Amino acid sequence: MNIALEDNFDFSYYQLQIFLSEGEQGYMFCRADNQYLISRINENLRRDLHEKGIDCSVLFLKAESDVPLLAQIEQAAAQCDCLIVGNLSEIVNTPENGLRWLTQLNFAREALWAIGRPILFWADERSMHLIINHAYDLYSQRRQMTVHFTGTADMEVAAKLPREGWEQFLASEEYKELQAEITLLERRLHGAKEKGYPEARLFAEIALPLARRYARLGLGEDARKLLVEYESQTEEADDPDVLQELGQVYYSLHDYPQAISLLRRANELLEMEYGNRTEYPLQWYDNLRYIVEWSEETGRSTTLLGEIQAAASVLEADEGTEWKLPALSVFRNLQGDIARGKGQLQDARTYYEQGLKISEQVNRANPHSEQLQRDLGVSFNKLGDTLAALGQLSAAKNYYEEGLNIREQLSRANPNSEQFQRDLTVSYDRLGNSLAALGQLTEAKGYYEQGLKIREQLSRANPNSELLQRDVGVSLNKLGNLFAALGQLSNAKRYYEQGLKISEQLSRANPHSERLHRDLGVSFIKLGNTLDALGHFKEAKGYYEQALKVSQQLSGVNPHSEQLQRDLAVSFFRLANILVKEKAMESGLGFYTKALEIFKNLLQANPHSQQLKNDVASTESKIKSLSEADNSASES
Image (cartoon, rainbow, N blue to C red; front, side):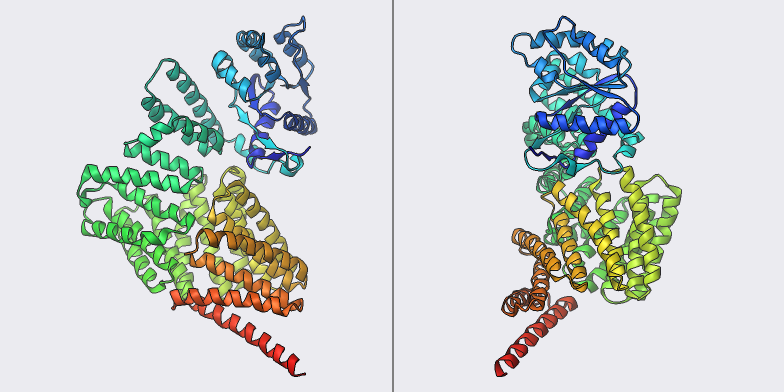
């Protein structure tokens, strides 16, 4: 029998391994409803702990024995370093005596601590419900949060081995603080329920902060269950602060439409409260900024240009208010982002230059604000990106160097700041890109390698972060691109394969993310290109076919996205190249024709795009060559 595991398996597994290996007293619960899964996890735990010199035993309690349950646990624990109790569910779920035996364990909770060994109790959903409701003292005095595993018959447990980095994260102060906060909130929630607190108060003061912390720790299932339990409060919420926090939780759970909807409701309430647009508070503008940024996850941010322009106009008309000038810089950058996304590079440049000018002005007035310095670095990078797209590579490089100077200062002053360290890697990428475009590949390689080193450190320190894992994949692909440009195809292939592995993991973990699935399609294309160049046409074709499948799915869901439609056309084009090399001329011509149709439609909608002009010309050239070859064959 095989088991399909949730994508958070490695995180949960390491929680158990750390708990059992620390050698401290206390107990914890672990929930799973599949006995085969429990057995396999127990086997892996005993093996991994044995390699560390830790003796771990598994105990199956005998309820009808003359020896009390506590004594059975004490005797077994005395013979090992840590203990796993494998059948608590069977004991607690016994129809006649289950609650009596559960009561015995509830009264023995202090004695369990006194054993001086870490003890792990396996339970299923029903028995956990009984423990929480009939032995809450036993539950609340556990040493660590309850861990959940899910599984169905599909794939091998061995395919989901623990990933490097979880151990470091679980030993970090951040994790310990979150764990302590979650435990406290869980106890508060249980106590408040027993005292009959109003549901609205329970939700706003305890359940929502608890869901936020679950989401931060990657416990999506727990966060969703809590939100479902208080679904009526979510629907009836009329406090902008509550709606904003709810939006952040749903964003963490990758439910972008719901997150955006909640911020929309928050802003509607703020509009009703303040009436005049000129009186809207900073919170309203923050919400709109998040709406735009989150809409980028679904490729729909360009539809918000009118709202962004209207908000920027109001901010511009009242720059005297302290917070409005920095906010105006942010909104100018958002306008630039949308214009650049539509291929309007000169408009984007204008917006970014306005944003940079404001940001420099604000920084001169507030020279000690790290956040404002960070915003200034963002402005430099955005202008660099636009100039690079316009082909002004040296000017772009100058802006990137300005941004790098700021980020190096901030990262040195804040070596433990994930945000500032990540910003630094973005600057390394930008400079690497500009140097590569200028043909300075050795220098570009140095920047890419510096970025990869920091990103790997960040992802090891916070392995539950999708963003940081994706960053590592980006660095790997950039190094793959560089080695491909150097003609070192085997090295390029190695980096692309590592990047693909990360893209596959992330897209499985977040099946609704357009960006992550596009990353996956791009990885397929890059590997296909490399294998094509190596002459491995059959393998290349397989990757191109997988890229085409991804592109068809994404473009079907979001047919108005130029980027996704172009991805689809590129997949057709690449497959056509391979088919022609395999002498399947007719099929190749068919794919070239499909690619050309898409490229022409996109160019018609965006006639100033040089990239699309090149796409059309290249595809027409391929079709012409095929037609000429076919005519020559016919004449001969």
